[in-house]
Amino acid sequence: MSVLAFIPVKGFLGTGATFGADLNLVVQLVMGAALIAGALLAKKRRYKAHGICQTAVLLLNLLMIGLVMWPSFQQQVKPALSKVLHKWYYEAAAIHAVLGIAAELLGLYIVTVAGTNVLPQWLRLKNWKLWMRTELVLWTIVLASGVGTYYAWYLAPFR
Amino acid sequence: MYNKVRMLELTVYGLVGLAAILVVAFILRYDDEFPSAGETFQFNLINNADLNDSKSIEPGMGIAQFRGTVVKRESWPYLAP
Image 1 (cartoon, rainbow over the protein chains, first blue to last red):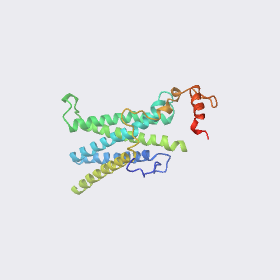
Image 2 (tube, each protein chain N blue to C red):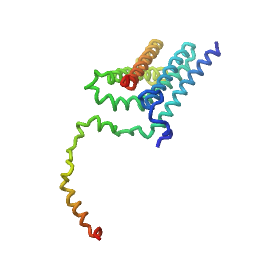
Image 3 (tube, one colour):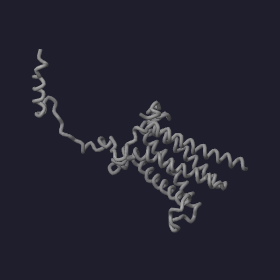
Image 4 (tube, rainbow over the protein chains, first blue to last red):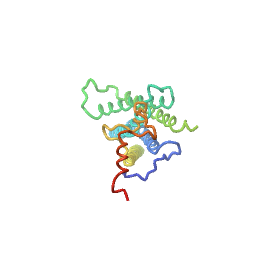
């Protein structure tokens, strides 16, 4: 029995989405705002706070991928991927999944290089700023594609 | 200047904290619905419906192996008046 079982199954954004999908959307938008604010911290030379913020968001997102997005993808997209990829419902999710995996892996790589010494010298980044900015841009695109997926799944079918 | 940076720092921590609280709320709400390791999704039965076809049982035909049981039940002695 879940602790917060009193929370309704239906979403709270007034769309056809489930509570989980709505909550995930809000979490992703909050995390996107935190990432942008975290990038500003680096500009102000607050590197420790910047590192804590970006790493926390990355790990929280990893949790949300494991709990929400990957199970949804496995249940609703993967079985039909080879047959009906031309449909927007599947296309949006597939594009979001590919970009999202790339962004998450690049983020994990940057955090590993920046926060630990486990990687050998030849695998470590040289141009920090370029890679971190690339990651922020990629993350923004992924966030936009995620909103697009939400639209294709829960809003477009009812219009 | 220092106050502005401090405000930005607090805003960032606030946003990360809010995201963390929402994630924890999600986990607490759905903890009994997450499939455990190795468990297959129930949706697989629907997704692979063509693989799950079983021989249909016609109503009224009866299955031979159960017929005897039914007859036996009808003739239980202690059910008789």
